[in-house]
Length: 358
Image 1 (tube, rainbow, N blue to C red):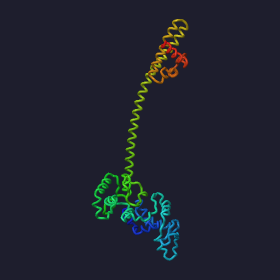
Image 2 (tube, rainbow, N blue to C red; image 1 turned 90 degrees about the horizontal axis):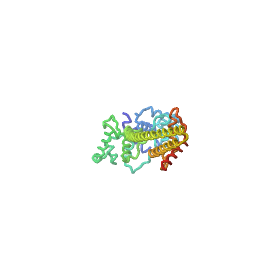
Image 3 (cartoon, helix red, strand yellow; image 1 turned 90 degrees about the vertical axis):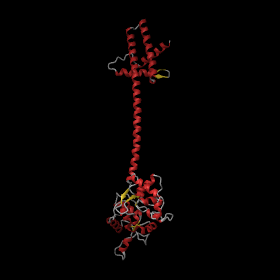
Image 4 (cartoon, rainbow, N blue to C red; image 1 turned 45 degrees about the vertical axis):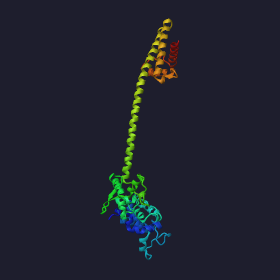
């Protein structure tokens, strides 16, 4: 029969020894081997108890005798009664933990000093606190603070039994097949985790809940929570991507409008430069310059109204417009940039605005 199918209290006379363990804070080696096996859900094996014994006899594991609690025991096979003393050797939790780290490095279980006797907890609670598994009737009674061995508790716990069975059906509480007549049993660790998630205080005074591995039910619950968070994050990303796409479309549209008028200003300035070259003197030159400067001023006003980038206060921003023209000219292969300097463009815009205002 596997120890993992029984509660720790029934293992190796644990029930009889437990009161002594609470008062002394030490575990007999046989009992320690059973508790390690139960806590990590592995079958009890002679190899573990033999390894503990060998470490104790060699002096690697510090051990004590019940009648000599303050003096470390050094085994001497030649002393009368040595074999009997071997059976009663006890070890402290911290020394047993050091042994586990050295001999079973993959084992995460650690002993804790048992709490002192608390007479405020009834005996059935102190006994069940040592159990690794419960059936659904026992679990329901425990959650309601009822002694599962009291016949009247069965009727009183009917609704809680239905709740526990529904949680098992939904995969929130993990169970296993016991291989015994009592059928499937609930893992106390999983039941404690279910209580914690639902704000139900764990009613038993002490168990191995903190030292056991995470159960499948807990992992499923955490996985579902992460999936919900991931879905919400993906929906947010999709919404933000849609907003960014809309903004990019608007920016692209505005840039096309601005580029159109930048090109027109460039063409007019080029015509103005050509007019100055063709007619360096005379009224015709003045008339053409006059007209082109007005057009440049008007286009600068229009450009500033269509894009705030080209506006300074309530007037066109000559420097920004000149910079935009410069970018276009540089992008044109073999462009004749004469007369299109920054100062020249700003002066043309300024003169054009003055002519429009006169």
